[in-house]
Length: 98
Picture 1 (cartoon, rainbow, N blue to C red):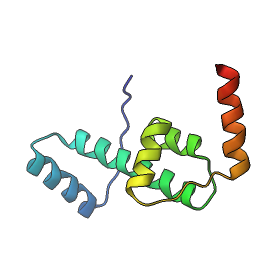
Picture 2 (cartoon, rainbow, N blue to C red; picture 1 turned 120 degrees about the vertical axis):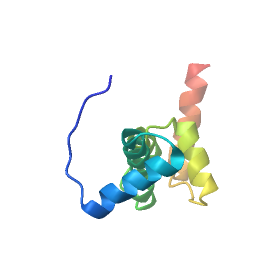
Picture 3 (cartoon, rainbow, N blue to C red; picture 1 turned 30 degrees about the horizontal axis):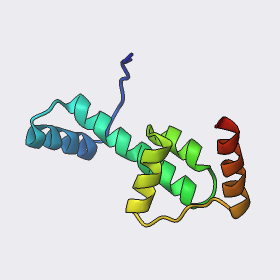
């Protein structure tokens, strides 16, 4: 469900949004939503790289599945922060589900 949010933008930012909308032949709201999605991903990646959040939380922040987030991190050459112990614990949990 979408909600409405009014925001104030600097002239340069608004000009950028308008130019992108014209270039892509889409409306300004879609440009802003796309930029917000990219920003969410960037924040999640930075926090994950710094060890501040888990891959699960990073995927939630980015609006991706864990698998999609893992693929994105691999594309960017970002190593997994998981310890050997965490990996082995995950394997145990998977075995319990079988």
